[in-house]
Image 1 (tube, rainbow, N blue to C red):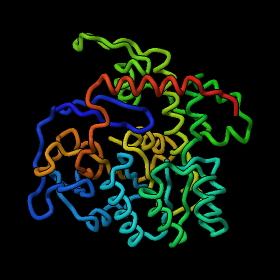
Image 2: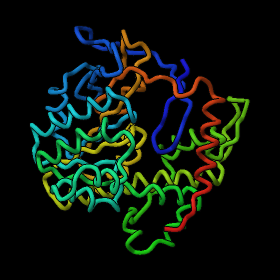
Image 3: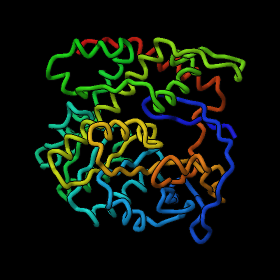
Amino acid sequence: MTTFKYLTAVGFALTLTACAAMPTTSGPGATLPDLTSYILMRTDAGARTPTRVSVDQAADVLAGYDVIFIGEAHEHPGNHLAEMALLRAIYARAPDLTLSMEQFERDVQPVVDDYLAGKIGEAPFMKNARAWGNYSTSYRPLVEFAKDHKLPVIAANTPEKIVRCVGKDGEAFLEHLSPEQRAWVAAKLNLQDGPYKDKFMGFAGGDAGHGGEENPDKSAPRKPPSETAIRSFAAQVTRDDTMAESIAQALQKNPGSKVVQINGSFHSESFLGTVERLKLRMPNLKIAVVNPEFAEDPLHPAVTPEDAKTGTFVLLLRELPEFYANETEMREAIKKQIEARSKTTCEL
C-alpha cells in the first residue's frame, strides 16, 4: 500500500507501508469508524504484545514519566481529541504540569503569558502569538485547559523565519542574529550523524524538492545528500534542539514538575529528533512518546512490528484523505513550497 503522508516541518514524503501487522486486542470499540476515532495501544516493554488501553489506563502509565511527547498528524480531528483527553487525564494524576507546544515560538512567549494571565483577549492573543490556522479547532482546548488550571504554556519552537533562513543559508545564518534574536534559538544545535539524520536524509535524499536527485533505479545506492538537503537538516534540527532546550529550561525552573509536549510526529517518532536532543541535555529524564500511526484497515486496525517501535504508546487513527492523488501532484506542491522559501529575505 502506498500512502502520501504529510510529515510535519520537513515537508512531504512518500511512505511505503509493507509490514505484516500484529492484531490488536479485539472487543467493543476496536474499530475506527470515522476521523474522530482513535485507539491507544501500549507498545513498550510494559506490554508483551501491543495491547489496547483506555485513556485512563494510558494516563496511569504516562503520569510516571517526566516528559510525555504527544506526536500528532496536524489537523487530524481524532489526534487532537486524543491529545485533549490525555492532557486532562494526566493532569488528574499529576497536577504539577507544564504544557509545551511546537505551535508557538519563543519570541511570542510574553504574549502567551499575557493571555494566560487574563491581560489580553483571545483575538489579540491569536494575532500577536501567530496562532496556527487551525488553532480554534485543534489547540484552543489545550490552551484553555491550561488557562483554567493555571498551568504554564511554553512557546517552545524557534521562529519560522529563522528556520527558513537556516534552511537557505545554513547554520552560519545564526551568527548574524542579534543577542535577543539568538536567544530564540537553542544555544547548541546537534547536527551529528545518527539514526535521525539518516531518517531525514533518507527522505530528503530522494526528494528533488529537498535537494535530492530522482533515481529511477531504486536498488542503486543512494547518492550523497546535496548541500540543499544538508541545510534542510540544519533547519529541522533548529526546531528540534530549540524545543528540547525549551523543555529542559522549564524543568530546571520547576524541579519535580512534568511536561506534556505537543509536536508533529516527525519530531518525536521512535524517540528521535527532539526526544534524543532532550536526552542529551538531561540524560536522567524518563521520557514517554505517544506516536500516531494510520491504520491500513480502519475496521480491523492493527499495529505493525515497525509501528510498535515508534512510541511507548501508538495512537491508531483513521487515515486522512490523500493530500495528493499521485507523486506528480506531491512534487509540484513541494516545488512551489521550495520556491516560496527561496524568496525569503533573511533579515530580521
